[in-house]
Length: 329
Image (cartoon, rainbow, N blue to C red):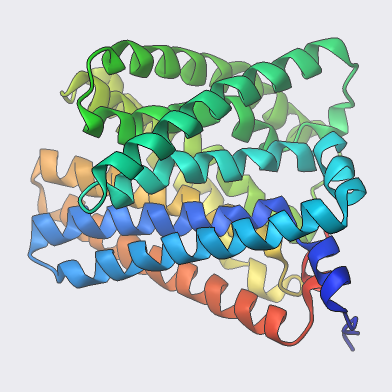
């Protein structure tokens, strides 16, 4: 029998993890995927814009809630930031700042630009800080989890909305972001893969974070194509790497509901799946083959159901006072 811990408002804020901003990332990615699908297949644009509106609202609510945590439980925030694994998820807040401008651009271009500049600056600073921290303090091999991808490879998210703003000089910013993100994908992926091979398996509740390993290739594909404006062999290679990793990791995600109770950490699967949907929709449009279109639509449908399911389960858990239990690893 599962025991539900009762929580007071203060303790609920104390247990609120910064990784919950992964829900905003997932919703933003799903919105952008549906926009591509609406343009390519004449699907209702209202679906994408509704998801985008929910993403903005979720971001505002989480900012307010985590702000309360920062004021009422600063020690908990500090402990989260200093944790060798949890600290990486502060990047989810910053990446949300980088993705929201793409959602807001058709409606509030000035606001989108401000958010993007803030997100880009914070992303570069956070990546610099984490690399400096990794090189200054001896790390434990067991801590090399997929979460390590977030702080530095997260720079690949900078060109997503940056390329749409059309400002002078942003091409160089995009190239810088691609260089940092794609370069650090290689050693970080190698370290994490080695840890998965030679250390104890990750806890069941953390298995969705394995989907983060998909993100460098799926997001890297979109960032690369958006920056260069063409589909060359490197772009195709990134896409097919993403497709291979999806084939490897998807069975682990499908087995998840039966292996352990729901955890907020399951949101780690949302954005990589949305990024894979965006990449597949983009590549299908380029390729024009029937099987590519079918795959793209199937993946979009699956990702939509996944994000809706995660949203429903998270809201139910919060409403029933389960925040203390669903945030446990």
